View (spheres, rainbow, N blue to C red):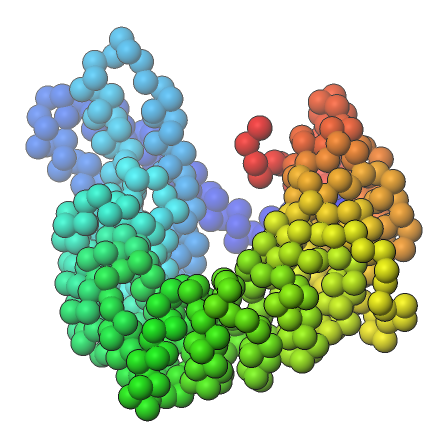
Amino acid sequence: MPQRKQPHSLETLALRAVGIWVKCIGKNLVDPVCWIFQRDCNEGVVLLQKSIVSINETLYASVPWYLFDKMAVQVLTSVNDLIQETKAAYDQFVPMSLFLSRMKVVVSLTEVVVHSHLKHLDISHWPKIMRHVLNQNLHRLEGLEELNLGSGSGGWDTSEAEKSILSGVRSMSNLTYLCLCFDCTDHILSVVGANCPLIQILDVTSSRSVTDRSVPSLLNCNYLRELKLYRTSVSVEGFKTLLTSLPCVQDLGRCDDFGNILERVSEENLGPLGLKSLQSRDLRASHLRLMVKLCPYLTHVSIFHDEKIADLTLLSALDNLTELKLMNCDFFGDRIKNLLEARGTNLILLHLEHVEEIDLNAIIYISQYCPRLKTLTLINCEFGENNNLIHRKMKVPPFLHLERLICVADCALMHLQFLLSHCFNIRYIQLGSSTGIDDKTMIEVFTKNPMKHLEELKILYSYGLSMQTVDLLMTCCDKLRTLSELESWEGISAQELRDFRHYITTHNLDLDVRPTLSY
């Protein structure tokens, strides 16, 4: 039986109360300010600003400094709720000017969290109408260490976004993390390079206005560990300069020009590089050889295979490799089996996507060659039904350390049954809509493996699963916290699902059965 819900901590309850307080103050503020707005707009603006300043000062004088970031999230959540309630209360018979005044008041409450002592702010999490207020006040957030601006305007209004971002970043000397996709520019990066010497993670993905002119500015950021420039206008020469001049860079994110970059580095007899993570396409066998030579510290490799790479065993020369993601290849034909035999003992993560020639033998090979594997992902792989097992005896208990399994592929039940029956320490399972799993298979699996550590199960669709499997999970999996997509189990009726949810509520079980997909 899953665990019962525990009481919230006093800290959590106190922070929620702060959010409720701000929401109540906001509700009581709407009518007086709107009334003054109707009479004198300037006077209404003055009153609103004074009220916001007063709330802001009260919040930061009453809450311990180490809770400022948590408080800000809770307050913004309450402000968002108030905005949605105000929208929902729209009445077509009320003058539009009055409705807009009300919206102005509640949206302006976003500003009450702005303070120089905030350390972390994820603006991308909030609705666009709130993001605008936060962006306009970035210059007041001098103490920020982590700033996530998300995708900004999506590249539609880069020049307008640039103004507020520039005014803010200039004063953020403690910034260590900045994410601004689509809207970043050379000008912004020049300001980052001049004013944010501690920056360690920079993500400007899809910002076409970032060019080689940003390279000199980025060279001032000596502590950069992650630099994500995918789909920017930085050239191969620019990448080469950054990689060879910034000693701390370990992750470039996705970089499809990486093979050409390696050629340039090799031509100039530079390297080795300090990269630990690589994600790329369009690599040739010669590029893999250069990668092994110039990037000896790689721990994570993700590549899209094509006919230009004849032998994936080249990757076996990477002594530190622990995470491997391969796409568009054949398990036996492209010698993945040989690669795992040579280097699998170090792997803790294996992701195979659009990989063919997967059969029960291949799964057994994975289990034997990768004994430390914690995460196994199989997406859109082609499974074959080969019943001629090569391994009759297994030297290593299969998948003993596996904690996460994702299988989104059309596979035979024997493949799935083998996987599920041996992963005794599994914590997370996600199965796609084509696995064909049913009650009978689950009963056979649980006879061998009761999955005592399972915390989350997500099966996107099944015509053969019913409440029998749900009862089995409830009986065996004491640590189960999430059981989603029950709406798509054909064997469960709408009434049975309502009864099950009622049972969870009345017994105070800490089990989330909300769907993650839209139905």
